[in-house]
Image 1 (spheres, helix red, strand yellow):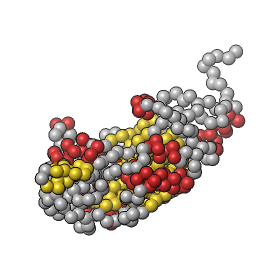
Image 2 (cartoon, rainbow, N blue to C red; image 1 turned 90 degrees about the vertical axis):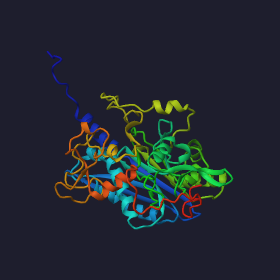
Image 3 (spheres, rainbow, N blue to C red; image 1 turned 180 degrees about the horizontal axis):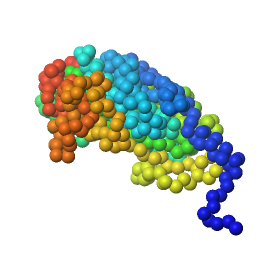
Image 4 (cartoon, one colour; image 1 turned 45 degrees about the horizontal axis):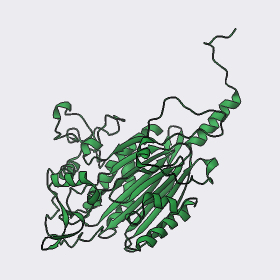
Length: 438
């Protein structure tokens, strides 16, 4: 006579189907396309698919997509394209498992962006660039951004998710306050007689962005610390659109998605660029990358038609996954879940962004700079929390630690010291950035 304490026997066929299903779920198919139209020749892209890293006895794959919209020349965009990825990967310990690696990405991206900026500024070139950087590992999408290029997501379930931040001074009051608190000035171009024209800009320099890589002549309060957002798609997949401001100045997110619905990524990217040029003409470099993320079985399936939903619905779609799975083994596919938000942080403070209490306490090594990865002798490192407003909660050995050079960079970004190479001229007619990023 059976009792409730006895284990139920699971048929072998069900176990095999479960294993095959799990394998398919962990390996979505990525198909991408790119379209562009050049005016200044300052937009650059980075696309690396199926990058591999060793995890235990196996291999894990990930893909990288980057968009670099340069200004005042292309030097910063080219340098970032060539060096940012390696700087990010160097900030991640090599012995992490798959879940730990994904969890480490947000802070590694911060470290990589800051190191790339620091190294480029040491070249004494005045060019700058926006960056939107996407890393896709399995169904997890991690996006880091500085500037005004954008990345949006339309999951198969419908809705629109904004995975990047807009760091234009015109639309970001928090960034304006941060810059003025750090010693910068924010205002429009003064043509004389009190008349002001154009977008809000940061002075000196006249840049209308609050975050970028490069721009050493503008001031350290234009920081390279990225906004980072990490989400996990359901197994139904979705479409990413990554575009420079040449697209977003002409099209809304809804218009960009609708104009290419049902098209494969290569045709979709070209169509988005075409629609942007039709709306406003070729006023700036215009670049678009479209990425479709799909289960292998649904690779050719079109995304759903646009659904009319209120803005409040999009936020409500983010929710934590239940500990109980709603999937059933006898179904052909696991039931689609909503997009799961894993991480989001836009603070410009390194002490907040590199904090190691969650989720990986051992991410940064004790005698290695958390930003530039240079080895330090015992006692040389400076805690990232040095000078914190809450020193009572921190101990002298609380890391991570910075070398003296990166500590100076941190203090300059926080307005605690002036960068030695910056000329603080308040002339509104700076020859460098006066008419950039209009």
